[in-house]
Image (cartoon, rainbow, N blue to C red; front, top):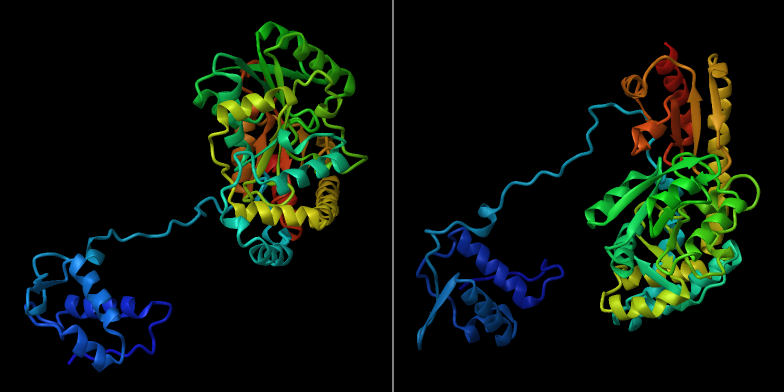
Length: 466
């Protein structure tokens, strides 16, 4: 009679393990087509298991066609010779690897987080606490705007660190700002004209275009977006990053902020989307107050993400709606499910509530300051330093390096790549060619390891003038 040991069944139940063993014997032809299987009662007694266990295993094998039954006779092995096992039908898959053909030593284009900087130990401990303390809540569907605990924590955080007084009901949590942009388009309407900064973060343009809305580009000047161009554009919605513009690094002064708020207040359909993506990491002086904090006309939609403060792979973002839009959002879009899992929402709530986020940001601010200062020091020690100008180095996690060279930006990027350094230039972020400024390199440094910096700067300068 068939004999199987259950000593190494692992996490399988008894019937699952028995089913797999019999199936494997059928596939390997240890059990021949037409061979009769033991009766349920006799098989169970022989293996010292219950009859129900054998019956469940037989039922599964019968359902998948590995055995067949003959009334009043028993179960028999099917002839599977005409069909290949499922495993043979699978295409051989290979895990793709990140291309290393460029042999990049240092990447000044990336805004990723160095893995060693993520607070793994604290995050894991907090997650374990959440799984213990919120066992039932974790299985309850989250409200469309996110769990209340997290929204309250974000509201308190914004008040303490950004000077913003907002109700938790105004906050909507989502999986990444890109998702939230799409929700705003549905809320505000596809018939509106959306304006973005030029130069600017081009993915925002692509998101608006992918959502089939009209997108216009407003040129930047020294104090932020050009007001005359904005007025002439006919825009209804203005998408800006006034506290630290990417890629120019400009901080919009308070006088221009009031001009922007005045522009928005002149029409009921006008709104400003304030993208405050790295405000926590201003490295000199206090953080710049959010535009939303001085908005008395209820016209600013504030957006931020934990991707910069925690990790680029933590896809938890949020927006703060004006109070006048909260009911409309609930009515039009409240049927959507929150796109951030409960496990992550409760963990982040606890992480904020217990003060870990504040401590982490303070630690990372010090870390990034050391990184930036090291890069600046290495640049100033270069023999060709007098051919460069450092710009906007205090505002956030990137700065600009203006270089005096006859090379085109395309040639600069290619020569740096050959030397193992990935760079981008300001001109690449201009939608309109007439707004493009050449010979200004963008230095993102959040993803560079500290020990790489001296050689990375050497390689960059060697590619520029050697």
